[in-house]
Amino acid sequence: MNNNFNPDKQHTLQSAVSISGTGLHTGVNVDMTLKPAHPGFGFQFQRIDLPGQPVIKADCDLVTDTSRGTTLQEGDTKVCTVEHILAALVGMGIDNCLIELNGPEIPIADGSSAPFVEIIEEAGVLEQDAAKVWYSIDTNITHYDELKKVEMTALPATDYKITTLIDFNSPVLGTQHAGLKTMRDFKEEIAPCRTFCFLHELEMLLQHNLIKGGDVNNAIVIVDKPVTPEVMERLAKVFNKKNIEVKNEGYLNNLELRFPNEPARHKTLDVVGDLALIGYPIKAHIIANRPGHSTNVDFARKIKQYIKKNKHVKDVPVYDPNLPPVYSLQQIEKTLPHRYPFLMVDKIIELTDKHIVGIKNVTYNEQFFTGHFPGNPVMPGVLQVEALAQTGGILCINSLPPGEYDTYFLKIDNCKFKQKVVPGDTMILKMELISPIRRGICEMRGTVYVGNKIATEADLMAQVVKR
Image (tube, rainbow, N blue to C red; front, side):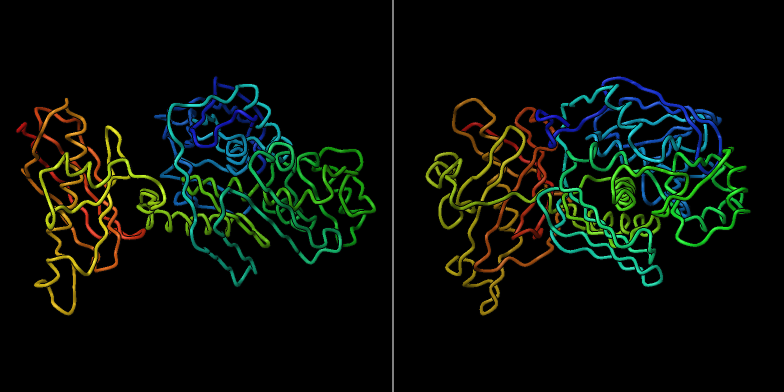
């Protein structure tokens, strides 16, 4: 990401680009091609080697296995070890990409995301004419796995950043932590960091006929227990090496670490890749303590559910009473025929050709409170709809040639009252055109917000008539 990169726009690749390699667990040689995709496409994998060339979305709800990597599966379509390519795409600011494969597993390459970052740079990053909608986490979201002693937390933040801590009770690794303060640092600080495992895990994987594509050069192997010469000889044969050694620091085959805390940094890489499966770009500070693929995916599901439940909050207009209005009360009176006490809009704070936002301050002195639930004042729902209609009337009239107009209700659909409006509330009235205005007929979707909660919503149709 260069200084001209706009994080509030969607991005894809400028051209298609390919890479080939062996899958870590399947040992199958795979050709992978990254292709540009249209805005809103997200990340999708396509198995071009299967009948019908099925496509599977990068979605945490489609994860079926996290034993030694993250596997997506829908029906008979499966793609294994997706985390490193997803991390590279997110780390390079890509939002939309089709990932074509002629095999079941992403190439492991050197066990990091660096080779994928290189081909993304080769293809080029293209800014698209579409806004990127960020989802801000506005409350702490915590996930704790008692069995694995893993804790993950998402804290409110103005950017997407990650802090990772690992402690595997290993004298070689010790306690490590790594931080990704901004995604702009991903390429240099996180992408080159390779996957790792312990020697005793390696032996178990070999016994279960896994890591068929494994090599001492695509993983950091940690040796924190004494190893017999027989074991070393057997590993040398498996990896087709004349000699395998253990460094004094406890790493196999004289492997040079790229960073002193490379294992912790790779865990950060995995978090980036696995949380891409949320399906929504987020702004949050992720703190991951002893993370693994299983808990990463569980946490992704938890965040996804939170976003789906609170998705409407991103659409809540921001009301700053210090800013001058777009329409003052006096200007509203020049546009609408309504007058006190039936004028239900105090000012307009946003106005475009497709939407409008008005404000109504509800006070105890409103005349309707005298007879509507005396002693327990509640604003009538029909008057909330009327406030929306008046706001929408200004949107419609503003789009027409100069003149004097009146707006008349034709229809109200899908009207729902979800929360009481009482004295002291500030109603934020948002109206959006559902379709272009034709022959003076306006179709609009209206929402009344109080704070960040929806009080009322309805679809309205009105006709604008010249006086």
